[in-house]
Image (cartoon, rainbow, N blue to C red; front, side):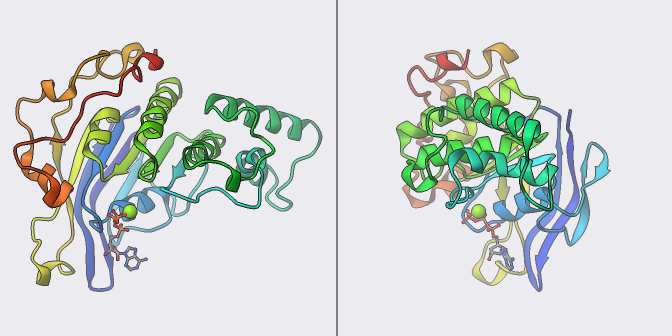
Length: 293
Ligand SMILES: Nc1ncnc2c1ncn2[C@@H]1O[C@H](COP(=O)(O)OP(=O)(O)OP(=O)(O)O)[C@@H](O)[C@H]1O
Ligand SMILES: [Mg+2]
């Protein structure tokens, strides 16, 4: 069970304040969706949680212990694109993390260890719908398949925290709906705390048990570098269903559950295209929720 705490965290690059005074408590097993406009610091936030970047001020705690200053197998990450290795086959891409973990010097396993690693990687590939593609190279996979592969790669090291940085942003809507079902299933079946950043409010509400927006209280051009983004409060999410029925009921429309739509945030996130009175389409893709059960 993995809880995460951001305690008054700041991130600055020289004089440029990217994030300021981030306070956040994430309970174990949450699926937190963080939304925010381009450039507000979403990836920077995730990279701090991954251990690739350090906070300039404040601290990040995982299960009450200050975060280690470098990535480890407790945290897996999937980026928007290209997190798989083009020169390795599908199977090798999934195995590589485990091979380096067990054999840091050679990056290769032998004998029984290798057979076990192949079995585990094959099982994961089956789970993400890539069975039969083990010997292919990423270039011959579609975008959706590459992201499934990236998920399998991240999951193979059995992370406790899964970080997703707009992993579905480049996918077509139909493929995206399928992969949403997959990620919910993975989250349901594994003991994972998920933190996902996205531009897309409807995706955030479809997947998250919590949805939180980055806000820029000071947003005039001359203030952009001097003041950073911070996290606002939780946006109202429909009540969480029991684990076996995670997600809204089939046929439900999430918008029905909102008393008050946070129009300003929606308009900020969606830019000029968002009509202030028209929340984005949050209806569920047909049949997708059935496959979760
Ligand atoms: N290594 C770095 N050095 C200097 N500035 C950086 C560095 N990494 C990020 N930044 C700056 O921090 C700000 C936030 O960047 P970040 O990539 O976190 O935004 P984002 O919200 O993920 O944007 P997008 O939605 O476009 O992915 C940007 O102004 C960026 O230029
Ligand atoms: Mg980003």
